[in-house]
Image (spheres, rainbow, N blue to C red):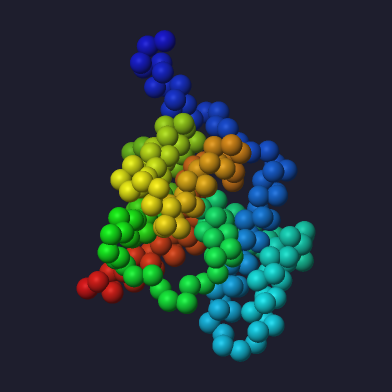
Length: 223
């Protein structure tokens, strides 16, 4: 096999690996339950009163996401937004496990080499989202979204996800986005959730809006 045949095999788009239909159903309910519970926790954390609401609302939203059929919120959310990305699922898991910090983290900290990775992740997510939006309008001569089914795109995503560890070592895990992206790529590599396309595993429209808002907030604070 020559180099051209090897490149053609690695970039083959006609037969992408896809998750099974049953596993996709479970993944949809699981990811929506995590995201809704985290959103509920973020909302009730702003309330000074109603301790019962703060305790039970995230659990109620999570359970509602598992209700099958039109009575469940997942049914309606999936009609418009399909399924959250794996990155969103792991970020939501981090919120549920560690709670809401009482004070926001500073943008920079003495001796912290990973202080800027969150901003870089937000910039990368915004850039990828813009590229995918433009790709839907066939702005580019090469289709970008189908490329996400190829092993080359997965390898590039892994290289980008592991870059903080090359630069900062294990201290890169202090940034939630770094660990969430690596965990999302690991699950995608093993299961091909949620669609077999690596772009869907690392980014979704709502996460793109959150990244855009985070980036604008950082620019506002800095300038």
